[in-house]
Image 1 (cartoon, rainbow, N blue to C red):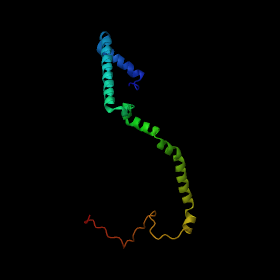
Image 2 (cartoon, rainbow, N blue to C red):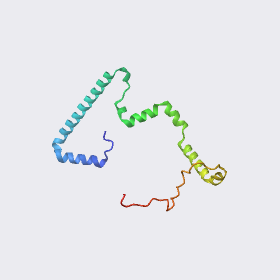
Image 3 (tube, rainbow, N blue to C red):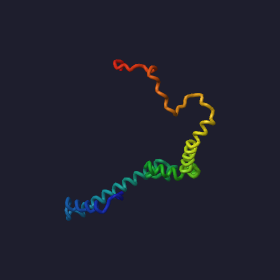
Image 4 (cartoon, rainbow, N blue to C red):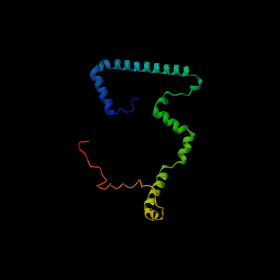
Length: 145
């Protein structure tokens, strides 16, 4: 619950508690706080048991921690056999290297391949279109805009 509290924060909390409550009342306050925490835990446990009993026997292995999205995804990804098989057959580095090699070999072979390839019938979409000649352009009309 308090895994991210460091030593400095803990010392600060203790000093503040002593200053606020005083050394005489501090043990009583600690007992009261620990009693409240016990009651909250007992209430939470009884609520969990009630929910499990209402859900029925098909949810006997249901854990409330599984409702956390990160835990749910981690559990589904680790337990699903189909995903394990896909993950074991798919190598992202190999796929990226294959694509990179294909692109690099295409760039290196573009000059001989272009001369051997049949002429393209349509426009080359990768090349930038030439600007129309000055007489073909429509005149700019500042009043129209």
